[in-house]
Length: 299
Image (cartoon, rainbow, N blue to C red; front, side, top):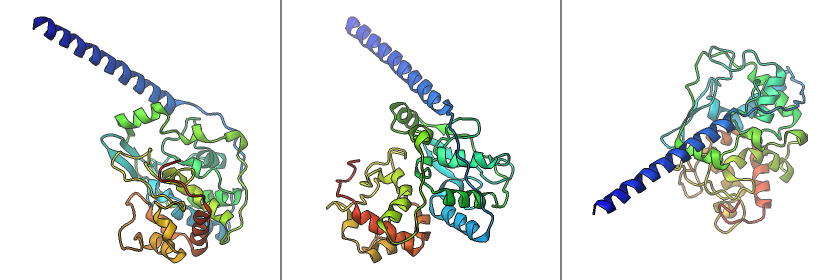
């Protein structure tokens, strides 16, 4: 009996040591990824100042997810607060106290939005620049022009706290900083003429890939807490609700956050997408309808 207890205690001790080693490796690797520096050659874009461009920039900021992380006043908002994932907040991007952009030059805005890299060369955590890298120079310039005009708000960003699941996902490469994913050397954003076309729908839909995947088949959202529900399948597969929706159903769903049967859309789905104009929403529908069927979550 004593030998058995001794063996059990030894086994537990070994497991504790192994867990400590693994935890230390995860902590070190995740910190290394967050602290990595990226050297990118930033192509400048023209920053316009006319009213039409500012209005376009405001529309992009309000409909492409900026508000969801930075808040309606752009002074920062809580993105995730979860024991597994930690506490993650979007930064203050106004000129007020606690803001990150008071000293930004135009090239710094481009580097942050298009490349996901801060002025210090570090990758910006939770900044989904892979969804914005495709923005045309005209749209990016308009967005920056608008963001430079938002009223200054004083608000400090709470300290980022990475939970154990966030660190494991970072270590395993399930969560990647946008700076790591973007092919910085070969970015060639093209101008796309707005219209109810598949091409324009593809351009707009780039902002959907973070949750729905590169092929829009949905499934587990790896960058979110374990409690987040799966993203919907947006292809024409039989398991996709969208496969049976009409264009009117699709537009109504995004505008009201309710499916045709009256049920609420996934609460993780940004409600700001419903503020897109008719051309954008119709183009999105045309693009999703053009996608080859893929089973849910088969990315």
